[in-house]
Length: 331
Image 1 (cartoon, rainbow, N blue to C red):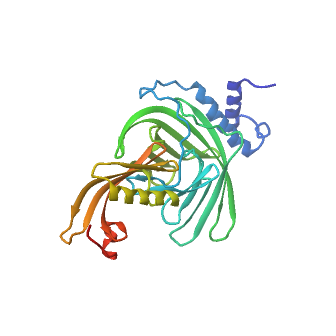
Image 2 (cartoon, helix red, strand yellow):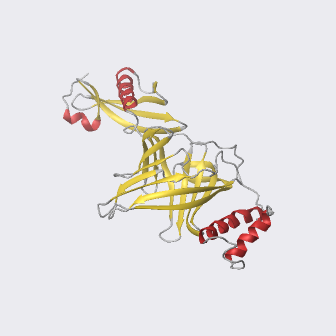
Image 3 (tube, rainbow, N blue to C red):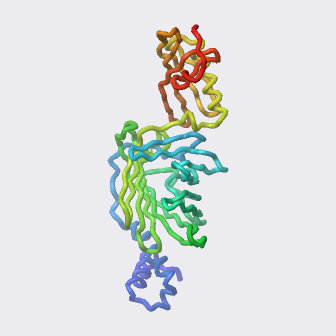
């Protein structure tokens, strides 16, 4: 006979508290599972809260492309290095690489880096069938996710395997100001557990306007808590795909050679919109013509902007820090 929901939750609690025999509770592994079930089930009896933040439409999964970059005030900078099927491989600095789906709240599906002792570390995580998705984001949504992870011991080569589970929820919306600007955000909170033990909680402020989070807080059962806010974001000129870099270079040459100051030169490279605008033209005391210009790259609702200088040479316009390396000519 199927027990009523509340009765099943208190049945789990009786096992946890030792009020039932071990046989009735089956195994110690079931002990943790029943406690997890109890934690999940009791949530329906919690007092409902009222959201006082901005009203936001449901937010779908974000999208990324090669070269999409995000820089935080903690000094952390990440960018998409390549696309692997439906997943994205991120460069986290040095030789640190990690692969994710479009859902940044989920686990790193693969990761690798070299530690301070010059040992190679790597691992994988798979999301188990039956796990729920938090997307599209809506206020008061809550899901549970189960994972299986493996990592390789750098000293022995032994594969360590373990199961974890997460509860993720959207407890509020909030307007927040960070160095990158002011945004209306969904607040997302995910807590990670090993069996019945809480391990870590991450909180993101996700801005649908740019398709990424603008703030992240992390707390641990052991270790140092951490918080960071977004400084800049958008396609990084030196990290976008090769064909896009070539198109950017051509557009800069065309704009500097033909456009008056203030006149825009616009083109596209795949999904990236490229806009180059000459700002100022000067002639040096050696008779060399130089121009200051602004370049802007936009893709997937995110933009990056840089102001640069270039000088005219026999081979075209060359960015300022390269001028000394080539022969110059007057124009």
